[in-house]
Image 1 (cartoon, rainbow, N blue to C red):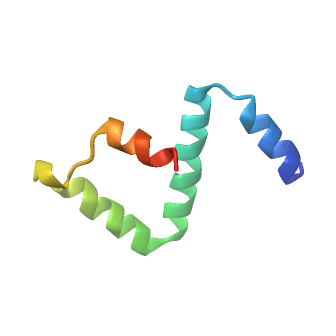
Image 2: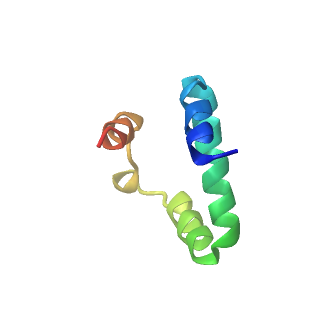
Length: 64
């Protein structure tokens, strides 16, 4: 499958399916990158709400 075919297929997915695909690709990257796994674990362990991002702020940042 070419990149153009892949892009076209992804564009036809529902928003939920695209979200699942994004999560899967990130998962694959983190499996290969030990530093990324440590960083993600560190961020997930943060208990202080000042370090958290709201869903709305994340969605807004994704628009860029």
